[in-house]
Figure 1 (tube, rainbow, N blue to C red):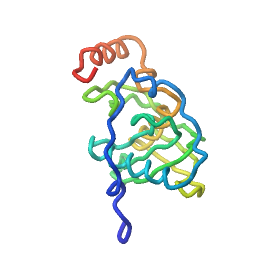
Figure 2: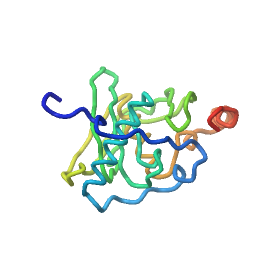
Figure 3: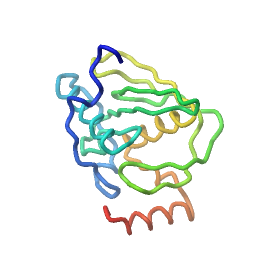
Figure 4: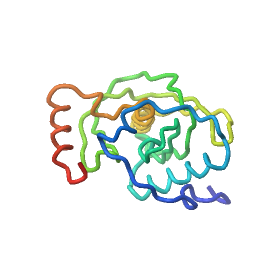
Amino acid sequence: MRGRPIPGSAGHVRPLRMLGDPTLHAPCEPVTDFGPSLARLVEDLFATMYRANGVGLAANQIGVPLRVFVYDCPDDEDVRHLGHIVNPRPTLTDGVAVRGAEGCLSLPGLEAGTERFDHAVVEGVTVDGEPVRIHGTGFFARCLQHECDHLEGLVYPDRLTGWRKAKVLRAARRASWS
């Protein structure tokens, strides 16, 4: 990153949307305007994610229903993955399905064992419209799948069933942010 600005350093922290907010539960629209407002949105996403101590953040989590997310997430080998993707499309999820603790900045303080594949590939473009293909394994693959879900109007409790789903939804109803 030497010689480049720190992601989010020019951004503004925006309020996070919490579980139940309609913006989180509707599919996002594709980005068609690749101008300065998109670059500002990405900066704001980074600033907001860092303030909340997250590893990924989708645009609808700050109330913007566009297909964009940012990430600063390690994989299982502690390799840092930092970037953003516009109009992402999951092109591959495979490998072993692993149930692991998953949380979300839109459900602060809550986690539940959520099943995700340990390998994911997502394709899209950058803020400049350049094609990008992101490969993730382990925890980073979980992050990519989680953020892609957000853009489809899903939150991780939507992937849960039975007592796991009931427990996290009950905790969400009791949470101070609810």
